[in-house]
Amino acid sequence: MSNDTKALEDLKRALRRLPGIGTKSAQRMAFHLLGRDRSVARDIAEALLRAVDRIGHCQQCNNFSETEICAICRSPRRDSGLLCVVESPADLVSLEQSGAFGGTYFVLMGRLSPLDGIGPEELGLPKLEALLDGGVVREVILATNATVEGEATAHYIGELARRRNLLATRIACGVPIGGEIEYIDRGTLARAFSGRREA
Amino acid sequence: MSNDTKALEDLKRALRRLPGIGTKSAQRMAFHLLGRDRSVARDIAEALLRAVDRIGHCQQCNNFSETEICAICRSPRRDSGLLCVVESPADLVSLEQSGAFGGTYFVLMGRLSPLDGIGPEELGLPKLEALLDGGVVREVILATNATVEGEATAHYIGELARRRNLLATRIACGVPIGGEIEYIDRGTLARAFSGRREA
Ligand SMILES: [Zn+2]
Ligand SMILES: [Zn+2]
Image 1 (cartoon, helix red, strand yellow):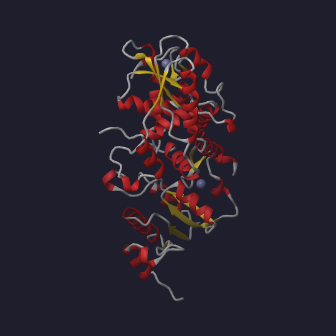
Image 2: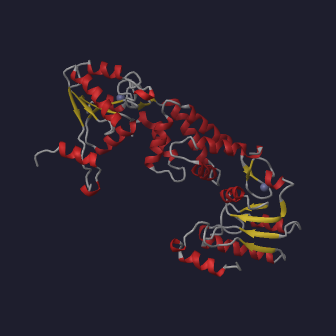
Image 3: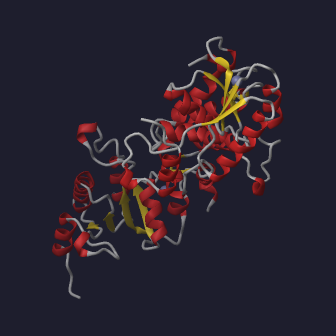
């Protein structure tokens, strides 16, 4: 590429580093951002710089937070005896939006994945163990993904809880609301059967 | 939203202004950018600021350029007697990648759309007319999109060329390479028939 398109090529290359953005999308974004209203590009740049500068992790739950202890951990209305363990901040957002949970969280920022070098340390499990030792948590709700790695992670953390005589529960796995049996995969159906309850 | 997530909410809102990015994608991007490697976020921010700062429009063809006259317009190897008119810089990139064209371009940065207030002035047509009056251009190749507005724009610019006794041609419309007749829309088939040539 010639020199008079360097800034453009740099921009496309940078945008391609966003998750889910390929060559075509990066180009479309770049051309869009260079269009009539360039304030959008400046706004995004500034929001990015402010975010990486200000957002850290909550000292207690490990979720993204701009304060040392996040709003959920600080809230007197949350039951800190119930601790829900999730893989990611996105999972926490989904659970909060469901309105199904009024306790507190611990965010692993990942899942056990020995092949990728992600072990208990990388997931902040020593911090979680300290929390479990604090005498406040009664029940640990394992809300990791229903994947092989998510199940392994739930199993590992369940052991940590049981070793301290704390109740460890796993979120239910089964047919999603509105799901049609005909189109549900075998694994999910098997789990729905083994998890059946009196109607 | 509470104060300790302001920078995060601002980031998500800014990312949602990217084309094709909804609430979910913006959140996924934000969380990704706040992950272990925050240099990606800084790189994107810097590339954006550099791009809006340095990239203007070529004085001759109106394409994005960091120099007053872009590399294509400056190149002695391009035939400046052939002028290809396209709607957008993305169209120019596609044509360049096809390797089918060795002339020069004029980029409209849009298409005639009276209802949106986009007329000849907004598309830089006075600049195009001056170029056509320059005595260098022999043929104007109309490579606007095969849409209603693209056709209207091509028709309008074709008139400008013919009024100056310059040849105006329109790129062919028809069945795409690899296209199966069974699945081609009626309009395209009609155009493919009316545009048929001796085999
Ligand atoms: Zn917290
Ligand atoms: Zn140019």
